Image (cartoon, helix red, strand yellow):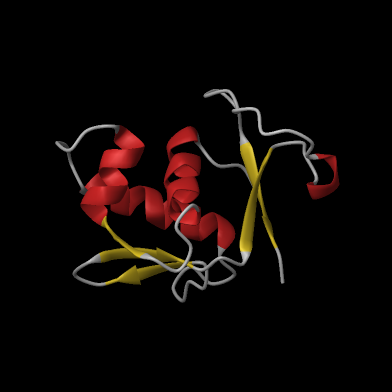
Length: 107
């Protein structure tokens, strides 16, 4: 599955803090680079990510919504640049902003 740049950035930010519940403001500031803006955009991106990575987006296992507070990432997931396999990763180069991403779920 492919993620847009903002979807990837939101997922990556959550994945950098596995198991930690993060406020919507904290995620928004880190992904959009501003503390001012429409926080509903984050909820839209989280829903899009869940539709792409969850077996049942109505019962998410990887990104959990903590109502009234924010979101938490369940660390059983790995994010890879599109076209990569876990065996082909050799460096930590930053992906291009125009890159597409695919998500590999590890069980």
